[in-house]
Image 1 (tube, rainbow, N blue to C red):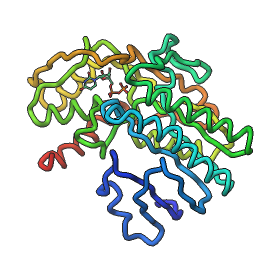
Image 2 (cartoon, rainbow, N blue to C red):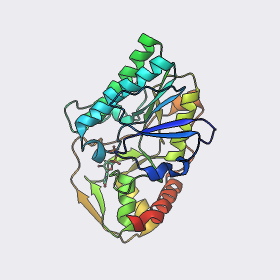
Image 3 (cartoon, protein in one colour):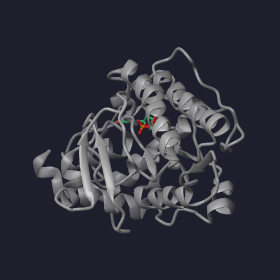
Image 4 (tube, rainbow, N blue to C red):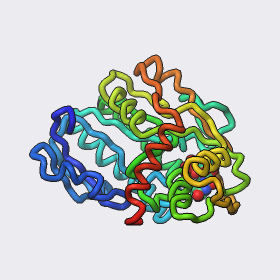
Amino acid sequence: MQAGEKVICLDNYFTGQKSNISKWIDHSNFELINHDIINPIELKVDKIWHLACPASPNQYQKNPINTAKVNFMGTYNMLEIARNTKAPLLLASSSEVYGDPQVHPQREDYHGHVNTTGIRSCYDEGKRISESLCFDYKRVHNCKVHVARIFNTYGPRMLPNDGRVISNFIVQALSNKPITIYGDGLQTRSFCYVDDLIEGLMRLMNKDHSGPINLGNPMEITIRDVADLIREEINPSIPIVYKSLPEDDPLKRQPDINLALTALDWKPEVNLSRGLALTINYFRSIISTI
Ligand code: UDP
């Protein structure tokens, strides 16, 4: 929208909310359609940003069959539009294609370690089949595809009940509730601030590179240390409670971003303490409505 492009936004509001796009709703370049991409739709477009699918384990496990359908049927429907219109398609894939990785950090040529029958597989295998479909449409129909493997991302406008770690910890600390660490908290993740991620996605769409390309912040941190950073920022006396580790929760995760560096000239700019401060400010501003 800021680049003056016309935007058609499809959402079924499973995890999205209208308030996030309220400032564009009456704009003449903006059209909002309440649509679930599991169902086909005909559109005349010249770029497709396929970002659909809940990304929080909490949310995508609520209706796992639907999650698999969004990833297969939704991606199929979007690729059919790409085939008919010749529009390039960017797929928001995920670091979850690496599963519980046995190679660390994860490079794009690592094929992953995914449990095909576990509670995460609707999403992990979903993203894997959506990548397969993209590359088959490229080979069979000459479609232009761009596949981003997105690592843990956070920032303002996450839902308070999203369920992922950063929003959970911030909302808990701001509401004076104990911080819930799953397992021993020594598992690691690498957190990318949303603005950095969006910059990476835009560069990928505008380059002649199909990917897959990892997009994430390589700064790896334990979940315990995330809890401490957030407590220090909000209230160091907030207690921590330890809960059981969800099934198949990956032990560690860190992107190798050398490909993004060379192919897109991209690296994240916002460090975790700055990104957390911005995210905490956001949740502070909406906390009265939570
Ligand atoms: N986690 C936690 N407490 C929470 C939410 C998540 O300790 O309230 C842990 C979770 O078990 C995982 C990590 O934080 O090890 C990241 O979880 P998240 O759901 O944010 O994303 P994931 O990387 O697992 O998809």
